[in-house]
Amino acid sequence: MEHIAFLGLGHMGAPMARRLLAAGHPSTVWNRTAGKAGPLVAEGAGLAASPADAVRDADVVISMLAGPDALEAVAEAAAQALRPGVRWIEMSTVGPDAVHRLAARLPEGVTLVDAPVMGSTDKAASGALGILAGGDTAGVEHLLAHLGNVTRTGPLGSGAALKLVLNSAVISGIAVVAEALRLADALGLDDGTARTALAGGPLAGVVARAHAEGVHFDATLALKDLDLATKTARLPVIEAASEHYRRVAEPGEDISRAAARIRTA
Image (tube, rainbow, N blue to C red; front, side, top):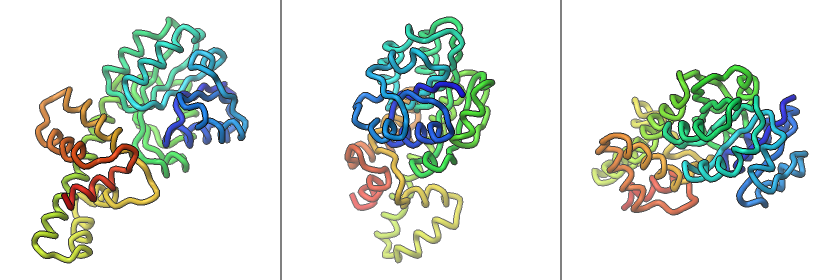
């Protein structure tokens, strides 16, 4: 069984690391806030004091971090401690440029796969994430299978690119649904009638996510994803959605709560 170093134990990282640990993979975990590692350590994971300590004896490194800046800092700390033959699976939402910067930083003999995920905390806990894998996944697909279903997207960086496309559509779509329901309110329509009609149309999945409970996608991270997208191309609709979220979202809350504020703002 490969020894896994798991870097980043946020809302998504912790349940993902737990699934790999439960599958029998010896694991060392690291998180900037060390206290978040407590439950995993109690279940048998080793706790590293730094990213370098975490990866020193690892066969596979998995990173699930907040964004490009966090990935850059972790890579700088860990890169020189990596052994030849290690495979690094980068699963954060950071965009393709950050993936290629990471690849350039890694020592010779270390293989990088970008494999960001679609799905929230419920999917992470049940192993039902959608995994968008770019690059050479040989040797790690059996690990990814513990986390969800893998879609091969092409060369290195293509998974990160497709993740931006999909997240931009979903996050912006939630804002559009919130505005559509605001229009329904202004027209005096019954809330249940309007929601049911929207849920029966082409926006069904977005309507469901806009009202989902028991899941978590931090609105601050959603804004980060939209910022990555709008720095890449001119996207007026996505820029408008980003401004909506920036105006009403509170750090740490799920995007559905921000959508509720867009509806009533």
